[in-house]
Image 1 (spheres, rainbow, N blue to C red):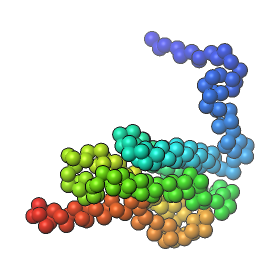
Image 2 (tube, rainbow, N blue to C red):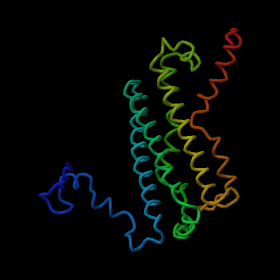
Image 3 (cartoon, rainbow, N blue to C red):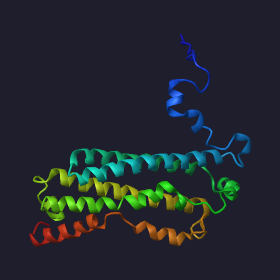
Length: 237
């Protein structure tokens, strides 16, 4: 026997429930082009994907500001928790970006002209992350100085410095997932317009490719070399 599913009746007029007012759904859902103004079917998805990026980058920026404040207060436990939230957010965005792979290159070209010279590099959320993320290193370095410990030491003596070690590993997790995002975005651009083309904002693909080597925290990558050298000197390999 099949149970019937009945719609949930609403006691409120459209847009007037507590849920709708709190989340401002009417305003939120009006921020995309109306269906009758879409140049192509996939244009709505393109807008939604990029608006989702801006929302999650806003959240990421909010958390990074909080993490900086906690580091300056030498308060690591909540800073580590919020950094894990930031990392999870970036993985959500990797899946969000993959939605654009459901377009064909020709589908994209059919509405690309409405973007004019707009490009992801103009994103306010992206610029906020690029400005704010590197600043965490200065805050963390001052914390290391306060604890009178070097970066190699927190790895070699991780049992003595579990919180410092956890935060350092959180930073490199964040750095790594952002590099994965850069790589995934680059491959998406190649997939849509070709490896020898010029991006929507006028950026040649080879110039975009150079950014794949950019990192937020080079010190955390370099310390791996130092640890390998120390391990070799101690005959640990």
